[in-house]
Amino acid sequence: MRHHWLHALAFGVAFATTPAAAQQAPGFSAPVEAQIQSVLPRMIAWRRDFHQNPELSYEEVRTARVIAAHLRSLRLDEVRTGIAQTGVVGVLRGGRPGPIIALRADMDALPVTEESDLPFRSRARGTYNGQSVGIMHACGHDTHMAILMAAASVLAARREEIAGTIIFVFQPSEEGAPPGGLGGARRMLEENLFGDLQPEAIFGLHAWPGPSGTVTMVPGPFMAGSDRLDITITGSQTHGAQPHAGVDPIVVSAQIINALQTIPSRQMDAVNSPVIVTIGMIQGGVRYNIIPQIVEMQGTIRYLNPETREDLYARIRRTVSEIAAASGATAEVNIAENAIPTVNPPALLNRARAAAVRALGDGAVIDGKPVMPAEDFAYFQRAVPGVFFFYGVNPPGVENADAAPNHNPRFFVHEPAMETGLRAMLAIALDHTTQ
Ligand SMILES: [Zn+2]
Ligand SMILES: [Zn+2]
Image (cartoon, rainbow, N blue to C red):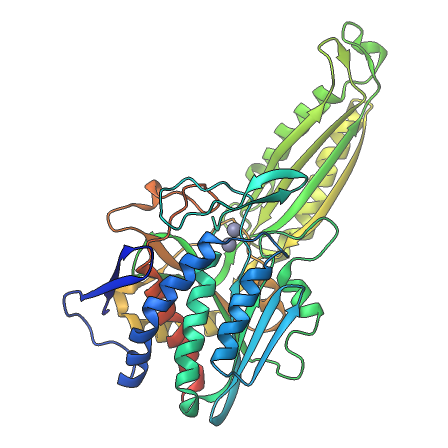
């Protein structure tokens, strides 16, 4: 793999490049390589601009404007805005006939207050769930957008050689659907994202703790399905000294929380159907000597194997309602889909992997393991065969265990790693559109 490390001197305007020790030949033609080199400083500048100006889900108004202006400056054949509220789509028709493919980046930031001393750190604030919050690109979506804008630059500059059509999908609201609404991927698809340009494949990447200069590719189930769990236990209110005169929903909820943990560990196949059930919120009671009537719990369910979902739901409902019934309480269980599992079709993954190896070198492609966070790229995969992969963002010398995880106020992307993400995306796109 060849690497040109970018060193920011200050505030994202001045750069110097120093070639690392000569390694394997790069996998791009000289003209493509020249385009890559020329776009790298702008890619970093775009990322810093997005980082400094993060916007919450479905509020990516400024972000969308910056992206659309860039795509128009490339004179793409089509630039559409306002799809799924703040989404942006660009279409590049190559000079020669060939397949249609799509490349996707997500746009939203999180209600997280950044803890860093970066000169371009976010000081943005906003309102989330009625609370005043800091806003931060704590999941690296700023880098995904900058990488896809850079890829669009490179591919647009080589459009005469492109055999086929490339759709650039900038998707809002990845970080979870608003209450009662749809997340960005589903909404874009409902709003007829592709129209009569149905792609034969779609690709996306994500910043993730891992060595800089690497990508991680996993065939089959890669990221979990995620559902929201809401439980209401209703007992009968009574004096704290006279529990027999009522039904105590607090003791019932304690039994339920413990019993739910036995579903992943005692009832599901630990190897073929890994499952997590987390209760993240419990609320009940107002005073130490009153047994309340109601306890409410909220949680998240994660699973990797789509085939076991209905069975898992049934076990959760059974456990909750039978334990409640055993004490004379009643239980209401609501499970709402948040994201389905991200599953990489093995043949398409292997093709993407081979392209990445040719571009980056063998050692740069890690065959990883599935993870239990979710990603709504899965909905694109349900509509179009698709591959999702990670690019490593750890600074040199930082191990995964020491890296701040995604969504942490100290989540940090080592910027030179973005070049690897860009090269991987370009390698995959050109593999499908070079004939
Ligand atoms: Zn995230
Ligand atoms: Zn994310």
